[in-house]
Length: 244
Image: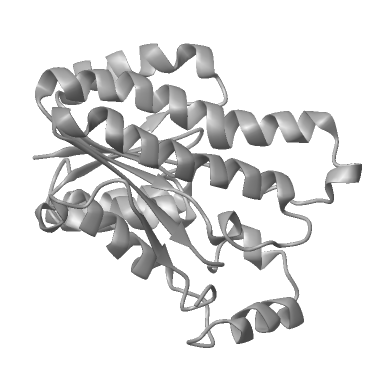
């Protein structure tokens, strides 16, 4: 059973990715700060169909200095790490001119520094094991400007640059590195919008809707699977045509 770490795996896209991977024959290891009812329910369902296919590991990814210990413990508990999905991220919004420096630091720490450091230690393991897959969750905000999301967009843009260069570094070692750039989805970030804002964003897309969580999870699963062996250093956009 191929082990795939999914950060931010307790809700939203991360939980949907973990659910999808467990159903497709992987062992998904959901890493998040806390267990919640939704994750517990998904784990219970996975246990009935494929015991051991979805596991939870509590960890605060903002604690960057303890990430090496996390990776050691994951390898000790589950064995070889085949895949890493860097999904955990803060979605704070606000105009740059009035955003507190502490919020800027939190965004950069969790959205950029943490996944880079986690990838560093996971890639070391993959190098010794002979290969693996990295999938970084970016965002269409890396391509298209949105007022109030300048810092968030900066962190997501950095993940795309990181992905492309990482693919060059580790490709010869049998490791693929790609990114998925979702559009606005039905998540905590968009639930804070009023109906008019949501409809306005949906109308911008070619398909006149938000992409579904499961559609983005399908893209992640594709990049982890055998059908994408020759795909690396790319960004797969799943946005219902918002950036078309």
